Length: 149
Image 1 (cartoon, rainbow, N blue to C red):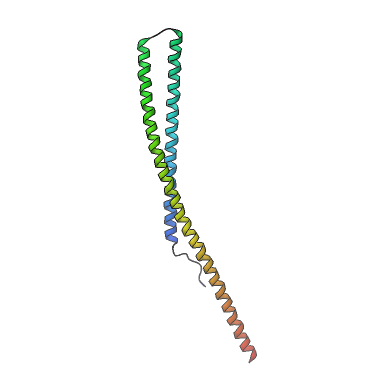
Image 2 (cartoon, one colour):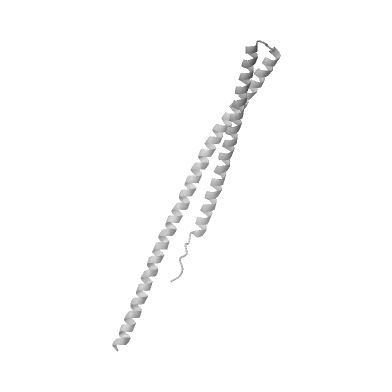
């Protein structure tokens, strides 16, 4: 009997390739999310440092109006950057969820074909065993007929 051959092997390879590509795109998006988180943390740390510096100046009693105005302008710029990064993080989180869902669906498609391949392999092995048993029965019957003569 011929060796087992899964007729949908090419389709399975294509689905595995597509799934792996989707996984790669998901990893890229997650990496971008980590970079955004790092930038947001850096801005938050810089804002905290700025607030502490302003507090220190006020505690010393030396009030430099131009320095305070410059500090406030800088803080407004940091807040704008923080808002922009938050919006980007929200859009990126949605994109990550979409990509994650696509990976789940692609993985399911691959598993369906793997399950089908396994079933076909079991059916092929069963048919192979039945053919071997039939052939052995025929050999035994032929020998019995030859021996009885």
